[in-house]
Image (spheres, helix red, strand yellow):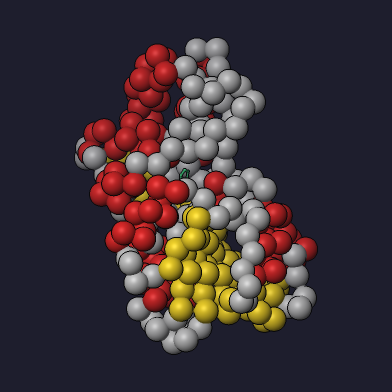
Length: 259
Ligand code: BEZ
């Protein structure tokens, strides 16, 4: 348990992440298409998780480096894809000797409120005219779930704040420009997402991704709050025994023009 105001990083069960929440990297395949990786390009996969998309990008013949801040994720990625290179580093503060032709990121950046620090590092890591291709949760992402958790937690006397960064197109394009990027493509779209594990899907999702959301709630109150959240959301998000989370995605392609 963490006291209000203390930062708490999400704890990752890498096997459950791969087996029960595989939609995260399966949906990311569309972002790889947007990247259009080419043979011999040098590409950084920022927030690579267990490395599935890193490996997929390397199938194009590109030289890919996967980077993640979770030691557990990096260890699993190295074990699963020994032919790929993975580094354990912080997206807010990384540096490489050789620049990259492109930086790619799927479903990782919304974990990092300090987005200016990330974009500084990304800009530094790219060649002139290098591209940044990313998907993250966009404005309104999982709003129904976050609101239900906040209301239910408030009824139990806890003040829950969303730990995630879900920007609008305008906000993110402005930020990109302030870091020397020109935004060539930006789209914000609803992507209702089926959660695995049938009727337990929402509770499992909260236990995989919601550590930080629920960090102010003591362990002994969490299951009561989670089942009350399920009651609040059942009519809107449970369909034929499957939970459908109200995901919204922001996709961007930007070119580094300041160099
Ligand atoms: C997302 O991928 O949109 C997401 C992941 C974890 C928590 C919240 C949102």
